[in-house]
Image 1 (spheres, rainbow, N blue to C red):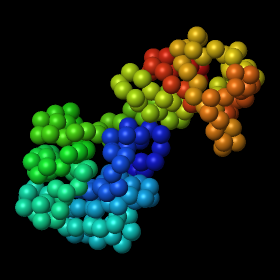
Image 2 (image 1 turned 120 degrees about the vertical axis):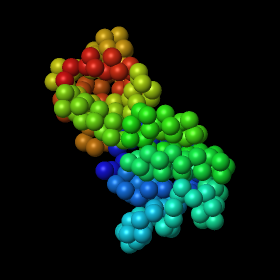
Image 3 (image 1 turned 30 degrees about the vertical axis):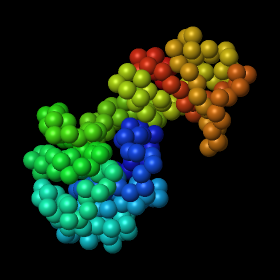
Length: 234
């Protein structure tokens, strides 16, 4: 599972932009994807897992700067490994509720200012929130929603949810818009949407001219409420 698309920004916007070092606890598929993406973006990443094989694998694959084998439910082990010194720690032990909750509790009691945690269910998420997690992600739920959207609205390529009601989306210019200028479409009046950019031949044009004539197959990036976005023709 990759984390480099527009839809994943809901996760990365929770990470502190001025921080250059991150720790990721739990090196399963989600944890590896987070490590890989942060590492490729140029950040220093410490990977942590109880399973020595996962630690060895991620080091061999060069997806982290450093990696350690330790039990994150042990506060002493976390302290000795320097985890409490990190500004941001991502806990991706989503399938082991007890270990996940105890790890988040340890990190917050140890003074880590920003803890992001993966949850496998609503109850898990509530428990993580109760012990102090600053941001909770539900990757399986988000992937399920994204799959449903892609099946029902194939022209909608990416979605970045600003909040539960509003999004930025990347959508293929529908046939109904082919040959019409941006001024002709008047997206704000007809759909309640604002056009941020268009993409043609792989090049984005921000705030395109109102006289630009759209072509079927180009991409549009628009912002607005989810209800208005769903009114766009497919």
